[in-house]
Image 1 (cartoon, rainbow, N blue to C red):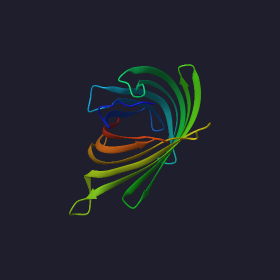
Image 2: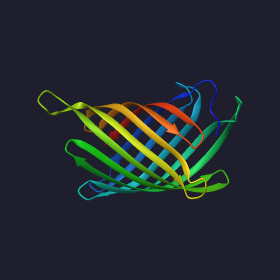
Image 3: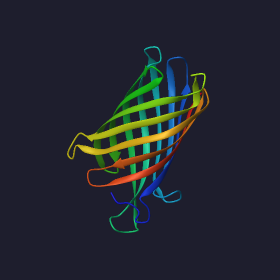
Image 4: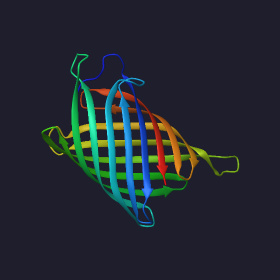
Length: 204
């Protein structure tokens, strides 16, 4: 994998939505537009969708999903890009819990990846923490701190794929909309990269 020679700081614009079909079933939809720089130098376009089932009083969700990923990878030490198409099937389990006012989210995901004419599989574990700010009345405000760590493991060598560490500030606009601005470091076995993330979460 190569990176643009002009900038070590990229930008991800992310939309994550869930449409409730009823009190158990939901339709997940997601768009991520990833840039090597502030904007305009496409690194990756990622589209995901999936059907989820919620249980355990809303604290757990299982989902079967599909993703399409277009990657624009720089060739090593060159300004030339190569386009790579990936189709991805994935299964995931999400579990949520609260420790006082702090929310914890665990996500376990197994991916089957069809990258051009190559087939790969990968495991991912994601742990997120959401800490609301308190008002003077000790009630939760609309602002919160968000942080997560996600590790990616291949089923074949090399086993370690990457790790992502993120921290950001969020704002709850309404029950159906949250916005976040954060900073993420993504590191690989021999390299690393920083990102500024702008995220919108929509639940309808």
